[in-house]
Amino acid sequence: MALSFIKKVFTFGREKPVEEQAPEETTPVEAAVPEQEAPVAESSVGSEFAEPASPPSVRSGHLPHEGGDRLESEAPAAQKEQADEQAEDDLRAELNAQEIEAEEASSSEHPLAIEVSGEPDATAIEPISPLVGEMSDRTEGGDEASVGSEFSSEITEAPTDSEPSSENTETPAVAPMLPKGFSTAVSAPAPAPEAPKQKLSWFQRLRAGLARTSSQLTGQITALFTKRKLDDQTLQDLEDLLIQADLGVETAMRVTDTLASERYGKDVTGEDVSRIMAQEIAKVLKPVAKPLQLDLSHKPHVILIVGVNGTGKTTTIGKLAAKLSGAGLKVMVAAGDTFRAAAIEQLKIWADRTKSEFIGTKLGADAAGLAFDAFQQAKASKSDVLIIDTAGRLQNKAELMAELEKIVRVLGKLDPDAPHTVLQTLDATTGQNALNQVEIFRNVAGVNGLIMTKLDGTARGGILVAISAKHKLPVYFIGVGEGVDDLEPFEAEDFAHAIAGIGQ
Ligand SMILES: Nc1nc2c(ncn2[C@@H]2O[C@H](COP(=O)(O)OP(=O)(O)OP(=O)(O)O)[C@@H](O)[C@H]2O)c(=O)[nH]1
Picture (spheres, protein in one colour):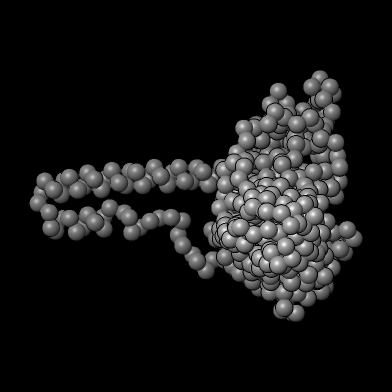
């Protein structure tokens, strides 16, 4: 049953099931060496990024002879023998660890990983990369076996067009089972039985992250309503408190209006206010809490990730890629943050980890050119989803915002609807400035969805309510940690309860 499901997932939308082929060796960006037989781009990109040039974890500092020399001169013979034995054991353990590391690395390496060399110039975009032909050749040649070790054995068993099996004819291809938080117009199979819920733990993290907002609010509200009836002054004071908590004037007034209509002239408790506050916040958030809709007919559905520096773009891409490739989709990630070497490295690591294809270019290269290349190559390799990272930029830096505009424009040359989704990451520790960020990124890059990150920290999540009331953009996910699984579909009621300090 599980085996046939995986087959279905993996063959979904593919024109032809592919045959398994021995994976080629992938050269990670930092480890590229000239003597390796690498596909076109690898050697040159490797040289671009060779600067750290750290030898592959030789750990010479840990080798026993260093300490051994010291022991030889200082220790008596018996101690020396003991030390030698110890050193030998250490060395053996070291070598074992290296072997395991090497094995893990080789199993996670992705033969389809591509790094583009040269400086693609988007101002003179021609069908750019010589890799495109190679890429499609390689794909058709069956490199898809590398999509993930967990799938490879299934691919081998998957029947080809020329070898129809009874299973294939009886079971039509179906849409992949998308992870929670995504949807697609293509009909999906009946959902599998639900895995045991872990909601509590992430909700606890969410609550902890919003504790500053909620405890401040509930404390002030309790103080405000102790031994006081609801009158104009208390309503005004409450409105001020809600505005200070970043909830925005509109939501603050919704809360006070509802409270007034229910309890004017009567005693009010802090719990009454929290309940009404949660209810009104949920009303604002429900229309924006939507799954991220993927149109898999695009092949690839292009997702562009934008936002201010450090808001969690690259990390969020890793988390999204993990969800999508975990569901059997073919994912490519593109390192469009060409300003920061670390960002390219970071994305490469996420790509390896999530069994996604990777495309990057050299530091300082034109990001729009890279985006264009990535789109072409994702098309050629029939990726389901392409996720493009961009450099973080402050919304008031006109030049950088113009570069972002160019990325969007260039993608539109290959498909007028691309990028199909433009996601903006918002750091939950930011206050009012986030409103302005959304305003400007929306105008420049056509942001059509939001992800709020760092809700596990000392978040000021109230601003998401104000943003939702004003912009009404879908909020797809929230980040509740730095780990690969710490991305949760946005749930309006949970969020409203966490802000209002109501437990679950
Ligand atoms: N606690 C927490 N940390 C997060 C979350 N998302 C991202 N981070 C951390 O935030 C920091 C910045 O994340 P990046 O993904 O590098 O952010 P970026 O937007 O790509 O950064 P730039 O490329 O500089 O613009 C990293 O230390 C991440 O681990 C989250 O949901 N919770």
